[in-house]
Length: 138
Image (cartoon, rainbow, N blue to C red; front, side, top):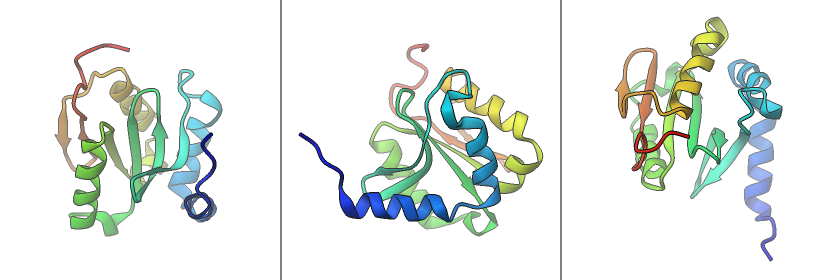
């Protein structure tokens, strides 16, 4: 039987308690299966990394970033690791979550429904599809 990983659980709890306004606002939209019935969790561990939000059913990770993440090499390494473990990665800026939440939610749904291009890197979002993305429709 699998038990909790105490250090991982403690770190995830600490991260959930220290989320920023944008993460809190997005969580209100994703929690309790509010987005078309999809279940999301917060601060989900993947290897040694923690995803801001993850939908296990869709193998989708969502990150909400501040300006300190622009061009961040650590984030690029992290993204490659997560995608190599069959998770698609979708990144938004804090300001976009706070100012245009409907567009963010529509983009998340597009990723879940596999309607996004496999790789998107624009000023507004970054999306990297995992292997198998777009091959089947959920």
